[in-house]
Amino acid sequence: MAQSSKKAVDNEPQNWLDDHGDYLYNYAVSRVSSREAAEDLVQETLLAALKNYSSFDGKSNIRTWLTGILRHKIMDHYRQIYKSDKNKVDIESGNIDDFFDQGVNKGRWRPERAPKAWSEWPDKSINQKEFMKILGECLNDLPERIATVFRMSQLEDMDTKIICKDLKISATNYWVIMHRARSGLRRCLEMLWLDKS
Amino acid sequence: MFGNALVRQIISVMKIKMKFIKTFTDLVTPPCEDITRLISKSQDTELTLKEKWQVRIHIIGCKLCHRYQEQLQKMNSLLKKNRKISNKEDLEKKEGLSPEAYKKIKSKIDKNIS
Image (tube, rainbow over the protein chains, first blue to last red):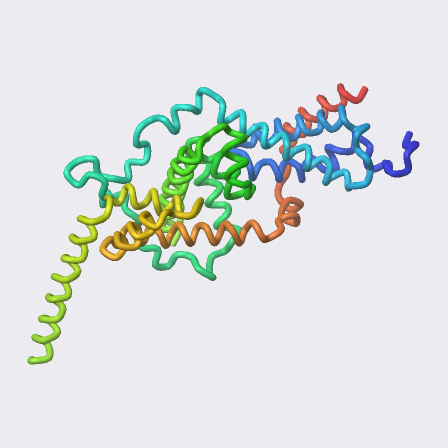
């Protein structure tokens, strides 16, 4: 079968799922908000790879090539979430966070929602993996659009300008979204973490 | 006796001072809601000089916003650290696809290969 020596036997498409399926899934699941979404992304990736196999030059590792396709799929997924009408309400609906008093003390922290002291909280002692796990849980609790922008910016380390262009949002809007994300995450981390200690 | 009274005196003066500072910073800077927005924004872009000073003065008198700032910085540095750690090994170790998902995808691919 393999006329081109570059495309070794273990690169054969029928082996992709067995050899790289779990890896691709794990890569995807840490970047999206549900298992189902991650599974769909793996499937789309493998089907796209199948279609475009002829363009694989054999220079890079097949796994690297597949991961590259997956990354594109994840970005498309982010864009779709952001565009989707059902998620739109997230950002435009008034003060979803409710951290601040709206009455006499307008704009001040509401005592029960104010930041607590993180006395035991985490410097060198914190386990990085555990932090990322909790952060992941907290991200899934955020409104999806907000979580998506945060993922692109803080987990994928994408440039702000590119994100704004990609999602067609203004810089001001971007700051508002990031602020919402950080406030929500800070609160969630605090609750989950303080619960544990 | 005398020592105790003096200490109490000093503390009460300090309390008054703290209250004064708090009221002062409250009066001259925007409320916490706006300050937290600026604190977050400072992680995304450079603040204007005016904004920088608003934050600086506000957090002198506001423990809560000061906390907010410190905690966002902590979150940020933990995230940065995490980006540096290569997690390739991790991706190998985790559980992977569920048997059901594997089957579903497998049949889709087989259809497309033949």
